[in-house]
Amino acid sequence: MQYFEDIEVGATASFGRYEVTREEVVAFAERYDPQPFHLSDEAAAQTHFGRLSASGWHTCGMTMAMVVANLKAHRQAGLGSPGLDELRWLKPVYPGDTLRCETEILDKRASQSRPEMGSYRSRMKVLNQDDVVVMTFVSIGLIATRPIA
Image (cartoon, rainbow, N blue to C red; front, side, top):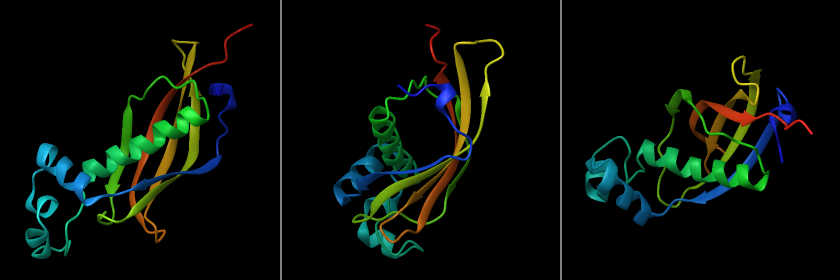
C-alpha cells in the first residue's frame, strides 16, 4: 500500500490509455453538454473544431477513469480530493484519439488537524496519441498516513 510517507515531491509518472469513441462522445454530450459541435459532424464542421469533438468535461471524466485505474494498480491509500486548480482545455479531443496521462508531484503537506492523513498536489498533463497536450490541471489528493504498528 502506498501512503503519505511514500509520496516523493518531484516524482513523475506516465500512465493510462483511453481510446475515445464517437459513440461515447455523442452519448456524453447528449446527456451533459449538448452543444452542437459535440453532437453533430455537420455542426462541428462550421466551428473552429472542424469536426466532432469531445466535451472538456468528458475529457475530465476519461482522465478520471485513468487516474482511478492507476491508483488501484499502485494500491494508493487515497481518501478522495477536495478539488483541483488551473483546469485548462488546450486542444480539442476527437473520436479516434487515444489519451494518456503524465503527472508530477509538486508538494505535499501533513494535516495539522487530522494526523491520519495528508495531502499532495500534482500537475496533470493529458496527451493524445501525437503527444500533444490536450488538457492540464493541478490535482489535490488526500491520502492516509501509514498506520502505526
